Length: 489
Ligand code: FRU
Image 1 (cartoon, rainbow, N blue to C red):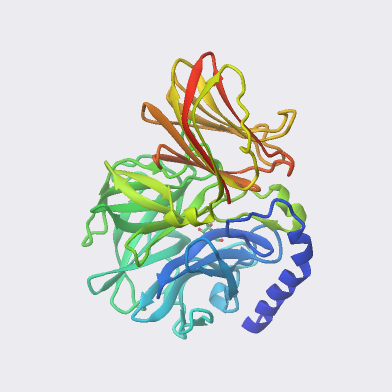
Image 2 (cartoon, rainbow, N blue to C red):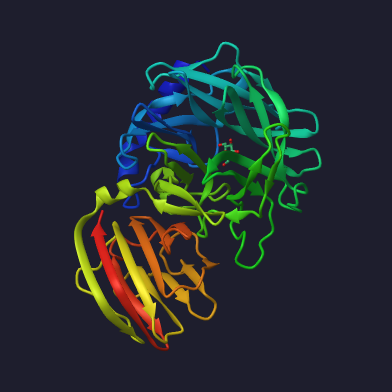
């Protein structure tokens, strides 16, 4: 189908479904969402001339994965996002089954996208093409006449070969791509180019069964590679990793390696894989360096093959996480909500030095469904303490965030959260005198930053709109809330 036709079809769908989509209480208030249909990976995150651009994998016609477009939003402050016209529609032969994930660069003033063209034949056989599109106004993107700039994969890999993330070092362009070997081992490959058109394979960055990684999945998607705190960091999304206790419990993983990249061989010598998020919905994160020199990360607040969220009744599914700023401390990534999130704070409520003992503590003016909470606990002798969020009056509905003093584990329990997927996620945190939670609650999500970003738990939850209660608890003993702050957002 022609570009124009495909675009019109998508806009018609958006218009047709608008009324239904907007009726959904679970539409989020401060997260990027699709206007209709399905959103997945963040693509092309970039800061150009003071504006942040974020693209997203977008299937307008259904809440399942299908023909992917690139949706487009922009923002001056990472908080207020404006929908722009769709950037890419799968109009050409080399992308006829979807404009898949990729990245953006500023090539001497030319806003350039690099992405994967996905082609499947009637037997489900796949072809994969790397493509370029360019824009002079940051709104309309023209596909390069030389597309595709890369046909299929190098020898030894399968056609699961996608998601280019590109950056420049000295005068050379580099690109990482996610793939699998013909032995079904996940890999990230490094390529280089002087002109963005001809790309040469440098080597394998890392992957399953190399660089000390061991068995770690049959396919790695959505790589990102950047410098942070003087080290090279590789983000990747391995598929097919078996869960080990509290680790790797989601369907697919999203995490990172810290090390040193050899630009001659492509090899990253690195430490072990660390998950970026400990909650339920978090995948395909992408980063960019902004004009303030910050490394900003946004991820898909969803997972592949998880399409039974209650919002499908209203014709849409999934959203992005809030933007986070990354820092490297002792070779571990620390994630903080970007400073700009503070602009959303309204109606502050503050409490100090509260005793929580055995029974639940409910406080005046501490409730709501779109809010931020900052809580500092200092334990006296309780075995466990925490917070109930999004509770109904009768407490049948609640989302439980807790800290277990014995195990030093933070736990997020959404078994009673309302509709939607259930489950518990746990993560070990370093023992500290004060345990701090910075929590962002939106109508159907929760993001918890533990101990100033040492760990983060991101999850969708679907409580009733009347479940707005918040309370604090301690089990078998006493805990002090040193300070508690709440803002409506
Ligand atoms: C990750 C992913 C990417 C692909 C895109 C397609 O979620 O599978 O590897 O490019 O989604 O929408």
